[in-house]
Image (cartoon, rainbow, N blue to C red; front, side):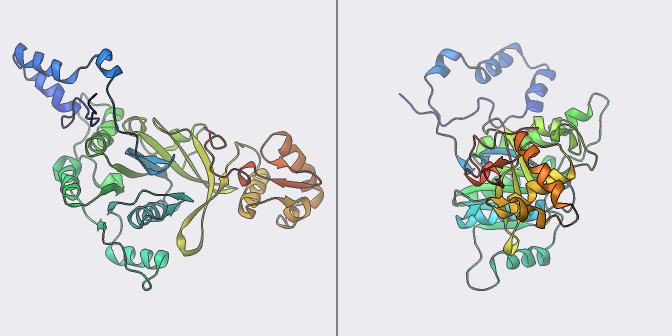
Length: 356
């Protein structure tokens, strides 16, 4: 049985190009050829074999296009730089091993001095050679003006291309305005869909950074700056957020289970995962307790928790902890000892299957 390389039938042709062929009034024979080329039967698909899914970071970032949302100044650029260094150097990201390979980092809101300063803080100026397989740029063409082809050039030249970081989407999205036949959704979709198609064509991961608006929403995806077209046009979505418990990273996608865990920028400005973030829309006091337990990375006594909440009465803290345990926001380990479940099973997919 032959092994398929997993090519998409319409690889190399965008949705707009397909529409244009038909709109231009191509002869029926040409449209029939197009139909035969882009369709496939389930009977043939049943026995077709595809290479296994490759992960940049196991169970977090697969091949394909991923959107990373976050409010300004929450650390999105530090997070993506941390990811890029981990992939280029074959290290870990949020405690998980990365597949080593070449990285292209488009840091379009930065300059060389800032990038140098950040990498120095993260891995040091001396003691190790900085990775030669991590190529950076601080300016780039828009995707409708050569930007995608420039990524293909990097891909052809790289020995083992694995990851492209686009920070930030606004700098490379198509410059055309809203036409009379275009909705805001379709404009946003068209801004990210080419990245999704390119990632599938090249077999790489593309991380696209975009701002999150300040206003809150019941569903985290609704807080992104833009329409649902941004999340609908990619394979996975991640959000770097912050509440009273600290920073958290939430994600879901077509190839990944939902996850939500507490993260912290640790020493040398590298991000760390502190454990699964419980579902909680409770009071700021509850979120602070969750943050304290996450920071501790292990069980704490009632007194230890109360000591870290100096502005609250110890009696009130002692009363609140059993309530949180009953609500399954935290876990009672016995004799006045509490923890997060994720201290026992940090980053386990079954624990992290929390979605908004």
